Image (tube, rainbow, N blue to C red; front, side, top):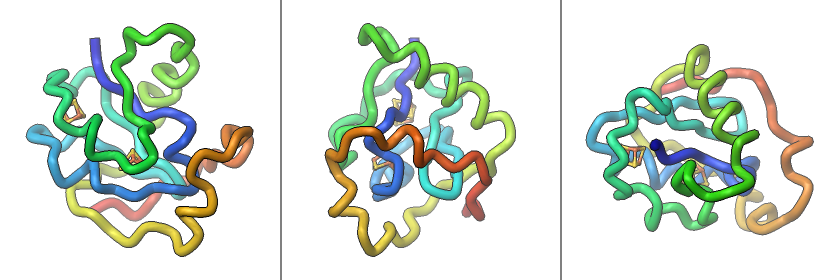
Length: 111
Ligand code: SF4
Ligand code: F3S
């Protein structure tokens, strides 16, 4: 089992999650973060920290696609351990449907 970041992180990218992870297993894309499934110790501390409620255990049904996305991008995106600035329009995107099509495969800058 692992925790994963799901669709509602896209374009919200609040980054409160990275501050609390004891093993620093978040990786940064241009407009979303992912969790490295092999590094996550399933502590669950990050889940309530996300204002977009985008972090879930991978045991929840229907999230296979997001487990795959976390697994793949964690291999190439840079590690992030400090909270940066969320996008100016993050709150406008919070809860919007159809965000998956906006996912950028480009890496973020990492910290
Ligand atoms: Fe990090 Fe724990 Fe969240 Fe896994 S569940 S990403 S170890 S804070
Ligand atoms: Fe994304 Fe939530 Fe973290 S919006 S960057 S998973 S705090």
